[in-house]
Image (cartoon, rainbow, N blue to C red; front, side, top):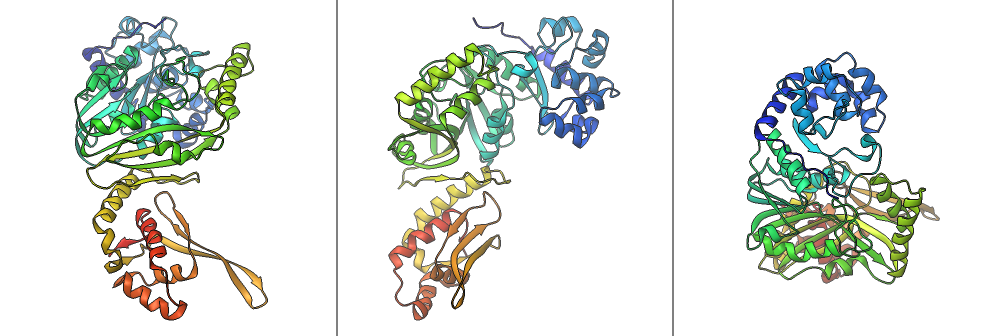
Amino acid sequence: MPSVVPDLSDDLCARLRDAFLTAGYTADGVVEVLGAQAHAALGRGEPEPARRASLDAGPVGTLIRLFLLGDVEPETAIHRALGPVGLDEAIAARIVTPDGRAGLDIRPYEANWWVVADLDADLRGGAVPADHVLGVGHASINLARATTRRPVGTLLDLGTGCGVQALHASTHASTITATDVSARALALARATFRLNELDVELARGEWFEPVQGRRFDQVVCNPPFVVGPARVDYTYRDSGLAGDGASAMIVRELPSYLNEGGVGQLLASWLHRRGEDWADRVRSWLPGGVDAWFVQRDIADPGLYVGTWLRDAGIDPRSAEGRTKANAWLDWFAANDVEGVGFGYVTLRRTDGDTEVVCEDLRHAYDDPLGPEAGRWLDNVAWLRDHDKELLATRFAVPPTVVLEEVSSPGEDGWAPVVRRLHRMDGPGWQHEVDEPTAKLLAGCQGALPLEDLIALLEYAYGEIDVDAALPVIRDLVLHGMLTPA
């Protein structure tokens, strides 16, 4: 049964915003009160250092304990912290409960924004309801970091949830439309936007139904991408489509909602089935006229996958309910020859020219956000499309962020190279193994001579070079930003 949908009016959100600003309940204010160590501990799920640091912090300390720690706070302290918002009014709006607990998860985020969502399983002390609205989690943060932030006119946030992606979109999009199938999600997203004084068009409906016939410059989507049987236990994660059907459907349909040259970016999951290449699987989802970049960040075995998502919903895998759900899920995986579940990012661009489709693993750790790299990848694809027949006449340069690693082993004649590997030290840290002639060729790429002249010089030392075999390597290096037109 759906829960009661909260209604946080424009006026209430305006006064709540004033209360938060007056108390200093902002992203910067929370860090200032807690200090770096207690704030880091809170992020690890260790609340006690934050609780101790907040005790003498006045109203902001009350708000930290109330919303971030899930503590029971005295009525007088809550009344003082909420300022112009009366306690009875806050209870009626389900911001707090009659017994002095948080009724909603309202927390500072990033550039002094606030996000309104439902309490997670830990703070609510049990499993979440079916229409639970997820707050700021790893998936939403990862998608935000993987999204390009170039100025656009129109942007669609498909399946907005609590509105995190739309918040980020407000930094580079002129107009934003946010949709969701859940009335509760739209109500909390509306509160998020009101708190942050953002004008966002909201529409309710399944998938693309609310925006039929419209096109956008950019579409972002954090869909219910959990794979398994065709069911909906939780609207925030389950699509009702079997397997990876939700990801497939979005990839297939999203380009038709893009303007020419428009970009779509989403999180997605795909099955790794026995005897099937995952790259062939995701390529089969694509319509024509689309550049596509599939980046696989992780592969989970079925047992780990099921346990992770059970815990995410607040269900103990050791409980009777957990065992029943786990067995049904694992039976489905076994019946469909599923050996693993891939997870990653998809970038799509609508184009009327030749298309480029790349599927690659990126499972190592890196620090830089992927969004700028996605933009560069699209730029590099466009450059290669325009200059493919001119590569030999192009002057290239190796960026200063690219280094060559050589691994050698001892032999009768001294050290003998075993591996030569290019590393890009920024972005996602791409790596390419190269042979000696290619390494020498790249050493000469300093923007002075065209590629064909460098190849001719190398042929004096190594004999005839197979240019047809060398050009795909050059294209890959250009795509990964390890070789740039001078």
